[in-house]
Image 1: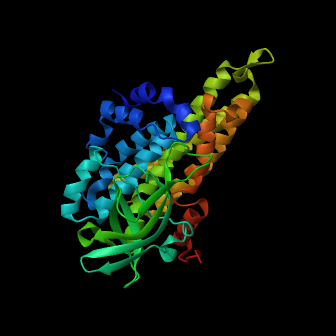
Image 2: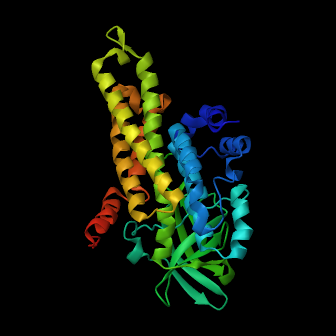
Image 3: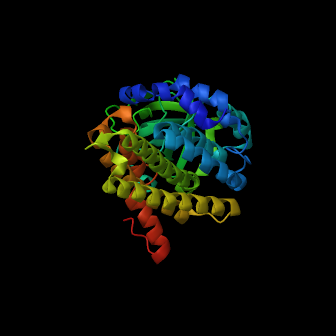
Amino acid sequence: MELEEAMEKHLRPVLAAHSEKGEFPFEAFSKVVADVKMLSDERLFADKTAENYVHSQYYNTYLYYVMARFDVSIATFMAVHAGLGYYTFLFGGSDEQKAKWLPKFQSFDLQTCFALTEPDHGSDIAGGLATSAKRDGDKWILNGEKRWIGGAGSADLIPVFARDIEDNKIKCFVVKKGQAGLRVDKIENKIGLRMVQNGHIYLEDVEVLESDRLPHINGFRDVANILYATRAIIGVLAAGNSGGAYRAALSYTSQRVQFGKKLTNFQLVQEKLARIVSNLQSQLAVNARVADLQTEGQYDEVRSSIAKMQNSKLMRENAALAREICGGNGIVYEYDVARFFTDAEAIYTYEGTHEVNSLVIGRAITGESAFV
């Protein structure tokens, strides 16, 4: 079964209700995974080495665009599990750890996430990460908090980034669901990505064996490599959000009658639709170029930041225009546009804010770091 067909069949009937309730449709999502077998597609997880992961990017670009065009919460859940979480183990794990866990992530027998950001540290996480790790024989003791961790409440394995109090380096530790000292509270009252279960994690003397530390993560540069590898996908999600907002707005305005005519008969409505389509073409061109560069192995943090920053900016305009031409009904989940409008704000911020990505690009242009 095709991905879009499966999402329409299993997820469409529960989408509005779960968005409004702020609950993830795990049962429906599992049916999509089973029908499409996307998590077992070798192109999604092609070449299980950090050096050669890039050639699957054409498939990833298409997959995440289609998912985000349907719903960004669904795409974000997938991007955290199969992107940030998966690549943390891929880039950071030993051969034994990868052999043990990666196949289970691919089959969705185990779910993972990415526990980096904290209540007081987001953009400044490189120098400000406060969660601590203390070595005690063959185990580590973790203390601290993590916030905005998508999928944390349901994850079986949580890769937690903490600062080693001995050498002050960031390391990564695999915390397992239900461990003593681990508590995950759901973040409530969000206006965007309503279905994504963002968690606030509390770690109080949580014990992790040395064998469950990912040995190839020994500083923020290693963390940054994960972010650069996955940030371009957020640029794809931004384009997908634009595509979804456009489809929803076009459907609504093609049916809505005002002053005796369909809204699509009005010049101002057509002008806004034209702007959305033009912006979307630019977004898709950026995504295609990034996929080319990734496949050629000519990919770096600057291109990642350009894709995320530019596509998110255009997405925000597109979502606002789509909501605008739907009038008051544009803020009601029943008409789809509302989800894309509010979700745009979340995409605009996560995986590097507009300001932080602009500074990454600016540093490459000028040779000067303006972060602090």
